Length: 372
Image (cartoon, rainbow, N blue to C red; front, side, top):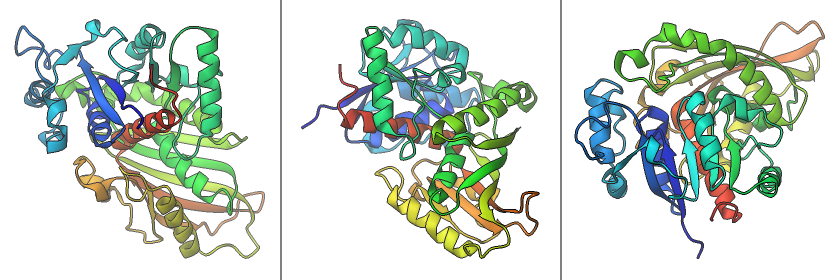
């Protein structure tokens, strides 16, 4: 029997971090070996570091995250909740086989340097994703043979476990929609307009919900979506993107418009057949954590923003995954007379990013790539 992978989560008290902890706790081949954070309110209660449970309660009390987001009450996660919260400055890189960095980019860059010499590090750091020597991993979409090749090349170039990058939350949803249809409806250009939750950036309380402060991050997000989507899908794809933040904690609503390579004046697949194809794709990509990765419908009300209201409660398995609704061919052809397909995507962006991290770890662990 393969040994369990020990995972350390850096930034475990944030929304994304706690999603990752909870999801990893459900995976039989992964155990949480360390939870670390430096939130002032998480470490304020005692001279000694609090337990993870105490730290989360401190964060809740300070108003950092709504109480409905305390989704780590599952009995299976009891041992994790009683683990001591490790201050960031005490993380050595020797505690675990792999680390997930659920922290702002500046802090992630610091930990990439200190931890990647001794363990495998998964990071959302925007600047790291575009490095040619660092794989960008999207479960079921990325070629994991290529991910392993790049990881091995990093290890040969220097001692350590290496870096694996994870996608932007907008890229994650669009990649599955495009990948699920690529065989029948090849894309030439896509337009992505998304409203997604604010980025706390390590802040708590009202500071984390300052949507105006988040506007400054949007320009980088647009460029990131373009470059990441091309790297993930491995093809020359025209990408137009608009990213906008709204005052929600965990939700994403995206309108995806695909300029296809199909002739607008030839018979096109019916919208219901397209929805059926995406549903088959979602069922084929089912995992222990998500019963159906993609659920699709032509219904204009399916996948509306209201559908994500339950997504913050991670125990609701039906809330996981990507909902795609209002699938339709646009009546007006593009200037090149190519057909345009549009759809709407709704999902819990923080949860799905945590899921991508955990599934990537499981895939690499299954190939024997992560144990020290």
